[in-house]
Image (tube, rainbow over all chains, first blue to last red; front, side, top):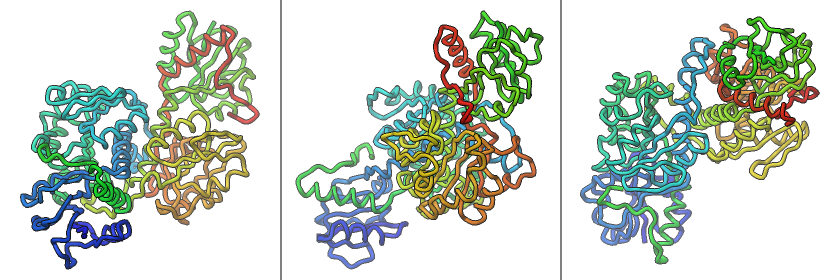
Length: 314
Length: 314
């Protein structure tokens, strides 16, 4: 019984080592190793080369090493077996660190004071609003969105949530579906998007949506923090919205093409803060542990956690 | 019955208006107004000119508009009446925003990615540790230290505390006094100082103390975040400790002389992040409300909250 580590872009070696240690009774192979395709019962993947998962006749389940499975689902030869997206406490916690950091950096004008520092300028107009005066709207209210919401609340931000299907939480004002979007946007000072990339969300973060966010407000205009999937945003619209003052500023971790083109105008825009798709960092130790436990539970008759619904794309 | 607003450096006008609205039955005057010194029963102060509070024969209590009272206590002509330092939920919340922001900015290398962005560089070595791997040590564990500790914990940082006198908290490993300092420092990756300036703390944040912090560690060396009082730090020692790699980086909100000299070498040091003493921002509305409530309670026979013990300086 073999577990196939099908990774491109990252080094597969640490993953192979982690799984070998956690599942000593299995053969763990990478795409570069010789292996019998009929022996492969499980595959763990991150951007596997197209078609590399075809012809695995005894495959029982596929595990994505990232929370987003849009790239996997784009492969027409992806085997029709249960597909599991990782829900990992460490990955979730890292995403919340990122979200809280960037909400606070906009609230407390980190870059303004850094600019002043670089000019040797001591200046404070005491206009910084408090967290309790700034409404954070979280789009995508799954495991990650809920964790971010809980931590933003602990810091003092009033949090509102939007999800595709209705969800209820005592601590947050919740909105759902297209019919809930207008009111959600109109009440949001900082929009945090953790949405998956699906046919419904592709291009959703566009000029029209930005213009429906609460205009004005105590930050001088709405702020976008996007750490979901690049395909959800329209990058030309972000630039246009900054130009039109429909957006005040944005922090982007994801882009429609990654790595971002060195010539992209996004890099040098003074109101944009960019990070190289590292908001939530997968660590082999934590994620491999999670997947090994799922395989053992699955073989003992348990249910897989984090099963992807291919009809909605996440 | 008169309340005197004795402020220098800030505009007294908004404070005067706030108190006039909250205490309509009192006369509210600034140092520039004509007033009868015998009528002054209360004074609210921020860096009052030396001696400006003398000759107020019927003064019943003094309220500091900031949490630190070192500047007030340095005035030998300060009247010997109950002195109240402000303990204000808004001020406390703002300090915690600042502390959490700067802990996360160091954890997630905000400035490194900003530098990369300015160079158009997409690069990530995936070496960022998680909050749960970084121990934050909070020195000064009063109302502000406790609130910061609670919020840092919520984000996932293990928090340790140090206070002058022993304090017990279930959620944090606590240390106290000179005898507790060594172990506290040896376990601390990020040192957050919220200490008051007293004869005991003056110059405490010096090269010797920095060298006793946990060296190495997952941030590559210890980090200082100082938002207490400038006199607690030795600025030449901060620069020397950065030079010696005994400190990795620091965020400073306070300085031995404020505003910081435009020629200070602190401004341009690439490992320093500076803000103009605005970590915890006093807002007239919130603080005036608090003081007006204290005055009413005091006159009804209640106890003043936040009384300064002049023998220890806070």
